[in-house]
Image (cartoon, rainbow, N blue to C red; front, side):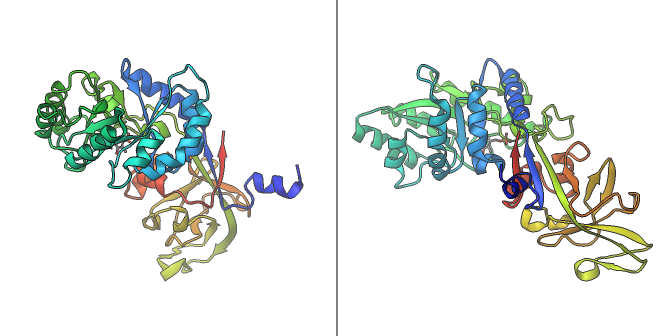
Length: 379
Ligand SMILES: *Cc1c(COP(=O)(O)O)cnc(C)c1O
């Protein structure tokens, strides 16, 4: 390969290297599938597969046997459609399906029907429009009916179930599943889980022939009562902890290493970064790293977060800038960190969840904010 190009391929042109371990991703899929068996396991790949790259993640999951993919927007589904068809490619095998969680927006019925995308129906008006589209086309269109079991975010009211049956409102549709979403699945002891389960069970009884889809990542670890027939894990696939305050059973998928762009020694009293938000109390060795809030590193990590190098913690000092931040490298021997070296932000010494906690946020937000400037390596 041409020298310059191979240089860029190894990431020297970027401020950091984001490594996505596809083996760990598919291991996590299999672990979740085993966890919810005999239920099927879908994959939630909204928001570009939580920032990891849906076009790369979906073919891996298809190869691992996943056939059900949930996104938030119709636009996301349309973007994924060619990849889904191409990655599948084997006639005779079960076809993959794409579901749109945010519902069926007015005017999108024809596009959705023509593309074979399955809307999650969240209101009676969406149901009427989709049933009308099916009647006009003279075909049974597939749908998932979502009910709000107690989160007050999306879905029809539990009382609507009865009317749907009584008035035959879904008779022109092929109901693939009855669905609801858990608000507190990452907290196994939260009584809201049980409350929601009871509500969903009563609704599901009205649709005895339909599958039930309930569990997200956390729900997969709440016990068999919560598994339904089609689980919808997202974060756990990507290595995030499905349950708060418990050991994470998932394999890490993401590793983030960022480049040292300058090192310096400063005397006691030196002001570090914007606003002099850190003042050296003793002579310090500093390293400036090529990552900032434009790359998705929350600004609140300033003076709180850390990077790691060969097992040594390097505390962030001063504010996070747009394109860089400064760490205290005094714990390392002089000369250990050089320009161009890579230090770890997410990896064996600092998990995704640990970095998220340090930033006062959750793994989901950290992953979906990962910037576009990293060199991405899929292993
Ligand atoms: C995002 C989402 C999921 C996936 O949740 P995780 O906690 O990431 O497993 C499942 N179902 C719905 C409706 C969602 O919005």
